[in-house]
Image 1: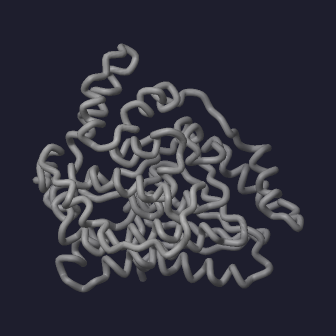
Image 2 (image 1 turned 180 degrees about the vertical axis):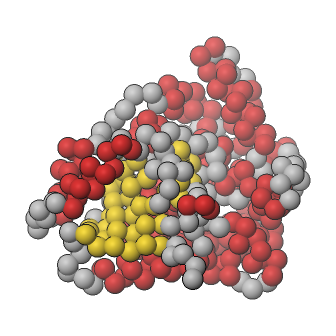
Image 3 (image 1 turned 30 degrees about the vertical axis):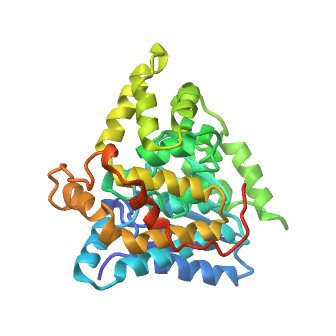
Length: 358
């Protein structure tokens, strides 16, 4: 019998959902998405459940994203599963965003892509000092999805553009500084926190009960944020209106304090899919003005075209299937990206709700 990929447990009126694919860095597949959705739907109707905790087994990852290889294989097979996965994954994320009971995401290790979709939807986002968080999609020729078009452009300044375009992984201090996490709990204190949660005397306001518990056990700020140190440079360069000017701005960086960072960032950009970066920048620009529901709808609109017309199949081939790490992006350079081709991906999308800025 195969091992359960999502473990379900209730302790002291708290429903615990544990991702249980540690060997695969807890990457989400369609079965896991459906298990999570089914249990959350059931607990929604259960007055005995006061709060939900999303967590994962293994120290390496909370969730390193979606099962990209499975989606690649699905597209090649022509079975349509890859689009079913996106629709159901996004619906799960939306459910968590709107969940009427507190949802605490307890994150240790990698939190990437689909893992960010789960975590950023939670009402209480708790990380350990071992977290490495990011939206690395442009590195495989894709764009930030799972609500990334909503939560990235709502970060301060140009931080969201920087993270979305470059796919940079950030650590705990950066996650707190950027507003992508609420509390940091030392990894050695997880057991103690669990025990306190097991003994918590719930009031009529479970969210406030969790706030008080986290205030006792976790921190809301920790020193050492590189993004804070680089913030003025990030805002200057990544507020440029297009990828050509972002790259040119980075290349012209003359401040000694920022030059090493600018060179590393240029190298990161030059390794990513030019088309995916340009589409990402436009996605975040539009997402800033859209409701959450429309952000998910726009991401799905792009998904329906991207496997045929974007760079994801080549990116997955080069980095995951053949592992030659030499993707042949189309086009290969930023200078060759046709703005009309970028615009064509967004053509035909009509927002269903009034614009919202948060």
